Image (cartoon, rainbow, N blue to C red; front, side, top):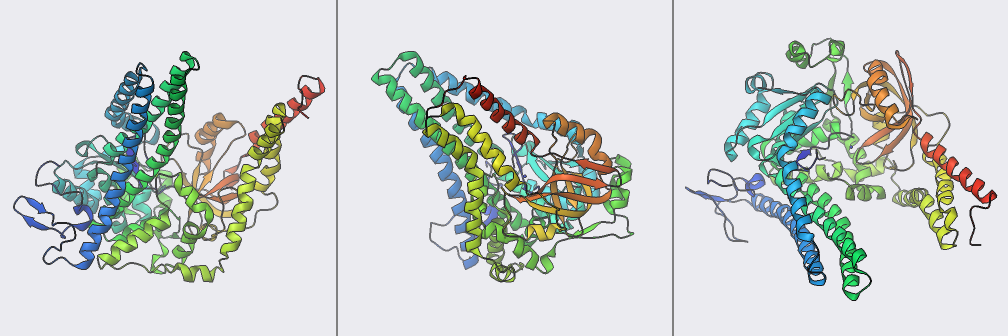
Length: 602
């Protein structure tokens, strides 16, 4: 998930950015280090298809697989360039006088300025809203020696200064990186990374972020995003020229070019998502080269799927001891220092069951298309391939056995998908039907009726049954459209937006795992901010229950209905505005029809 246009992050939350001297390693060595013969002037790449003396078959396979990922990135950027230059050339041929050059120059200049100043803006916002503090080198070395060694080894190998490490005092495990170039990159992590992950998993997460830095993903994603923006500028310029020039053949041609540019703009957005997912795979490969792939897979299972086991102990966690003098952990959080989290990777059955949504549910592929990160199940499968090629140990995720245990019925999943897709598009379908029948005044009311009809289906009523995070996440029939009523017993351990003082969403923990609780106030954004500022803090760390509707997207989350704890009850009204606005639209339409202000086409 990107922070502005220059940031990248591992998708730890339940929501990429991204050589001159011979001492630097080539990008292809991120994965296939040791595969190439070396001379005094750096790595020597053999001709395509030739085997380097001493190179193993797995080594060659790694090189081929890595080349595919880089080729995918190059092809995507090449497509974006071709789209941009094609429509620009076509428009100039038709118009010649369109002031398109200035618009493109301004777009490039604005993106360049944003690219240059975004790290400073991110520094300020993270310090102000998220209470982030940068740790100096000595402190990183003393507190996190494994992470320190990893960062400095990579920086020394690629010839740039070690990134600064920022720490956010929040138990939601999150990590991301941002910057301009390799030399001024920042890696930011939360306390949750050091609480819920073991040392090898911590290093794997940081190595993933280092992969974004080494691969210069800041520049790659900023450049690709600029190309997509230029497509929109071409569309805007063509439309302006068409409106001012009448209906000549020349202007009709410009209008056609503009529409093509607009279509390519939307295609370009999805190409950006694809490019970002490719960069995530590359960063995963970089991590697996420095820390065994199973450790990053373990971190993904723990955090992306929220599958953890929690035990209360009397031991004092080293994180609390090392940060108490800095005040980055509230003293009230001291009693959570005994929480120990470990994934079920020792017995990967649970993880395999959680992956079934990613691999079998029809919604999964649609969800991934609109995401900067690959589905977690796909990432773990990719890490498994790397581990096998490098002869590393890796848990055996048997999805077929998991499907048999859960008696997975793919036909039922597809029937459910079409039913839920119907729920999703019903308001639009009714509006289109009204338009086709010629009843244009009824289009808003038709859509509103569709919303009212589908709300009870998307938010089923009745008493919510008791559930656990693990049982919800291992349900392959989970949906991003229809919520499954659930009641969890546990506690809210932190904000979903780490450290944000007015964040209304929380991370909820029960005895089996972690899940995001999405609070939606009936007062809209103002109500959300007020609840996050004044009401949510009272419930953090307090035992109680969470009631709501579970949905599954890139990760699992519960749309909150009520959060109860020893501090009282926090109630949400997630569908209030949808229902109210729909009723108002229908009522207004009826009143106008009765007054003769609207005419129907029937």
